[in-house]
Image 1: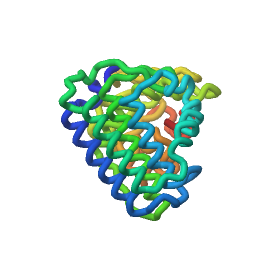
Image 2 (image 1 turned 135 degrees about the horizontal axis):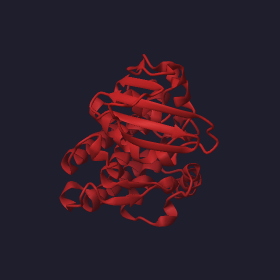
Image 3 (image 1 turned 180 degrees about the horizontal axis):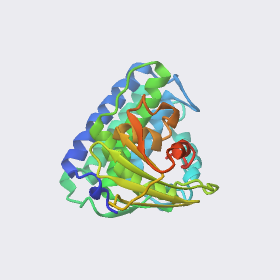
Image 4 (image 1 turned 90 degrees about the horizontal axis):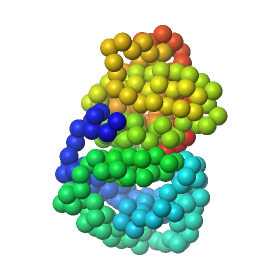
Length: 266
């Protein structure tokens, strides 16, 4: 289903949200410098990764898409080599230049419809709304990674969280772990998102609108941002209260614990 079926937006609104997230990300990166350890990367490498991500939008080549979800790690590693050792000021200048090119190609004045279909990692096909939301998510989620490493505050606005959930409805069917043995149906009643259902059977996932006759195993309700953090593996089901989610029903509510292991990290 189109992302618009779950969260309605416009090209202008998405462009504004991307610019705000980009500015926040760049300001924080400038303040923390290049050498902060952020998981397997440094903060400089996180910024270099964003330079490469934005460049993929404007200099697209099919070889820059991974056939399998985890295949993107090798693409990231290869593309980071060209920016190894760059100073933060240089990286941010490169990112600013790529963002200017991105706006010219994909910005609100381009007139490209939000339902235009695009290829994505893992063999997924997404619409342009989700493609733009992916970039929004890159800034917000990696900004969160850097903030956590630096012991800083970082928020993801409810509207951004709702957009990220709509994006997730399109890519998560391609990101189910191939070894998953579980069958579970989860309904999401999230703030700012049309009610939706994940019907999972082993490695196959169908995402659809909620129906009155649904009898889900689990009902998750509350914050769309919290659900997005689950989808991006930046939170676990042990933290539901902390991220504004609650189990609001279902035939087998204990199966909520599966949410933390069903998907590859986007």
